[in-house]
Length: 128
Image (cartoon, rainbow, N blue to C red; front, side, top):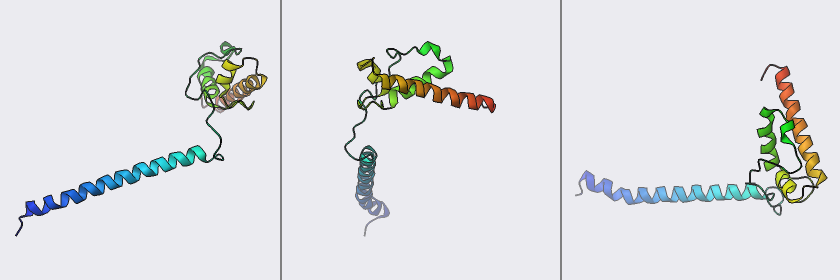
């Protein structure tokens, strides 16, 4: 007859195996979720080039004309958003590769106006 301590130690390998199986299932599920999120836009589109690079200065764009509190949000969007010119780069990266690209210049102006309007709207409602 086994003692109580012998019975509990006999169950431990099964518990450890269950934990390993649960962790493997969670990792597989996270991988599938990541794959799905990357491929939900049609499957053949790649992330814009320049993503992950954080440019602080953009050729041909005078960020000093922006209010100090607007510079960081504008830079963030320029470094994240894909340039609408079709180059498959972020707006900021496109400006570094092709400073003459008019589409990236227009994207900068649109982003600046959008953020200024949202900031002004928030200030008008007393949220700033």
